[in-house]
Image 1 (cartoon, helix red, strand yellow):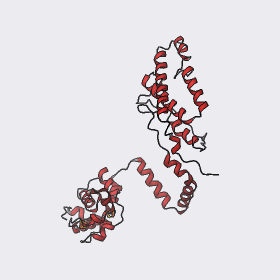
Image 2: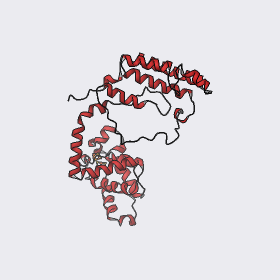
Image 3: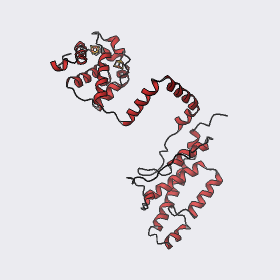
Image 4: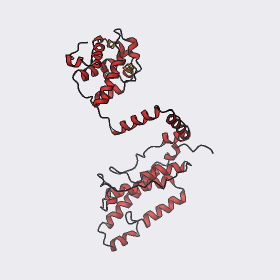
Length: 299
Ligand code: SF4
Ligand code: SF4
């Protein structure tokens, strides 16, 4: 492979050795056949030959690593399988190590990536911490089937925020027989920033669609996860009484008397949401969500 490193660049021993490796490559692509990431993804840039080109370009032009380059180099497993099929004896191992050093110097990873990497570097290199992590994993093992089965309920309505998602997450867990423990030391601060979505309920701004979505979610989740008696009580309360925000019939005159100009619209939106939730629950009766959650291990 032809390279165009300047003499100044080649004065750096690392670059000098990288250049020697690059020049040995004859672009034949035999290495791709034994590269697991190329076989899996079928992208030239996820094979050794493509990575070699990316590394060459980055080093030759002294470019900071880009997100795209980092993605393809990160996907390399360093299994070195490619070196076993290279007819030219290209020392890919040293080249990719050099590229990784360059990436660490010139690329700022997203915060989550940095946190995970720092955590792994800390835990994997400390035998005591590693043992602790292994014990924690062993203790948490019975939770694995539950965590795998838990999903955000995509039936919940709402632009941006889907109100009552906490109930949709927790009630099926309870219904499957698990015990939920709330840590009183954890404080949740609500409404620290204005929401950019359709949920105006908690800002004191009336929005009929947002109210209908919220009552739909509440109705669906409660009907799905409560027993027959509780369901009947909930429906009677929701339709006949309700709250200031989600009024039932009895709240309507009260809101009118208090001068709420949205009283009727509020009541209608709440009613519409309740009916939508009830209909959804009726149509989904044949496949209740909680049935997918595994029961807790026997004590
Ligand atoms: S080290 Fe493994 S994953 Fe990386 S390029 Fe070579 S064969 Fe592919
Ligand atoms: S097999 Fe060797 S020479 Fe051929 S492209 Fe891969 S690294 Fe280059």
